[in-house]
Image 1 (spheres, helix red, strand yellow):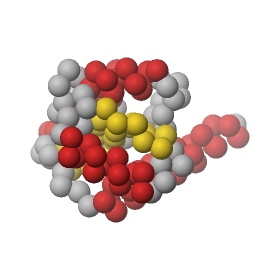
Image 2 (tube, one colour):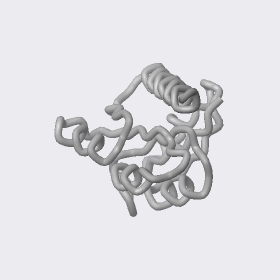
Image 3 (spheres, rainbow, N blue to C red):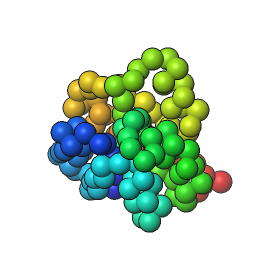
Length: 130
């Protein structure tokens, strides 16, 4: 079970993502804007953050960029209806680990979070073994 922060200013999407991840067995904390997401991420250790690209206060990419030096740094996923090549490129340049376009299927979200957690766990194991 991972500790996951979800932030989206659309209450329906926020509830949906929270429910999907909780059904997958994760402990989920939800916030409705970028500033609250940033404050929550910096106040506690999270394994993953799933952030809407466009939120009031701070956008998802702004939160991602501001959290690059967190220790431990959570896996950062942007969730967005904006899916042009430039939007996706901007998300990755900000430091996102993944970018999921809306609309998305429940299983896609759950599987991609699981994959990223596996990669994070593997990478930490390699660092600890050195």
